[in-house]
Length: 151
Image (cartoon, rainbow, N blue to C red):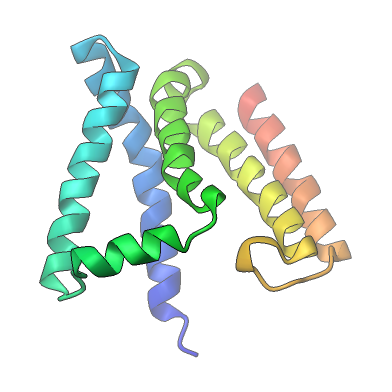
């Protein structure tokens, strides 16, 4: 499998995640509401995704979508809620912590959670044991988050 495209998109996603809190926090200050700023951010993202979905020819019929929705477990719908927490947290707390500290802590939370999800094979991820290399990497991430906060 060629990993070039996934690696590029992962890097670009990291770039976007570093920029997004600043942009959203400025919007939140300008309109005086972090919740409204998050709503606007999600609205713009929804419109953009709708256009991309349409352009790629992936629109589905309403009946297909309604039937598919009925078949899903209740917890499948919390992804959007989790995204709202991430966006709102970033626009409220990144300015207080600083971009580097917020991203370092955000990354640490992602890696800890990812290690646990893979350990148990949860949410469709392949089951992978916690290795010595992962523990060392996690310790280095904790150290880097601490160093970033201190600096």
